[in-house]
Amino acid sequence: MGKLVVSLDGVVIKEVQITKDKTTLGRRPYNDIVIDNLAVSGEHAVLQMVGADVFIEDLNSTNGTYINGKAIKKQLLSHNDTVEIGKYKIKYLVEDGTDYEKTMIMKPGAAASAAAAYSPTVGFGASGFGSLGPGSGPASIKVLNGAAAGREVQLTKVVTTVGKPGVQVASITKRPGGYVLAHVEGALRPTVNGNPVMGETVHLKNGDVVELAGTQMQFVQS
Image (cartoon, rainbow, N blue to C red; front, side):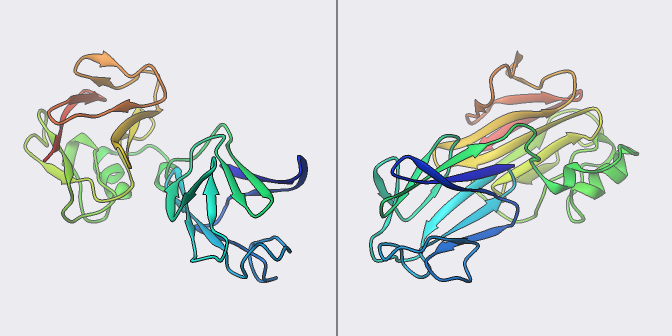
């Protein structure tokens, strides 16, 4: 999970683990992270955890919220980002062993039940693939082979996990610059256009073919 390290003039004041979907930050005592300083608004900012990602949003504060020296309204936090509020600096750190989704915490079972566990609304049948939500979106994945060939699922969530739990699982994350694929679970890494995913993430382009647990999927983005 991620954590925040709050410091003033180079001295660490507190460390806070990000464990809730929403973590509020401000001067008022009811905030999750209280910074008692007049430069900090009563309700200054909120951190929202979506899957493996953490977003920070400024709540129309008086003095603003800055990340790495630039004023922001809402932005995805990256490892080692420094949030500046008044004279306080808050470093965002991602610890090893991050859980990409709560749905990942399950016992491997039959493929059909695995798909149901990933989503009660969308399943890819015998392939064991699922989506975290229905609906329309700017991008989708289309299954090219196997029992679920021809099925297409819209990528409507910030993080969508696909694969067979206990065998091979990957995540597709929507970022400001596009969609990225990351290896989550399994001895074998997924491939993109035949090339194994070796780094932390791989940017997906329209038409890319992802192979995961023996199933080929095409990334489609209009």
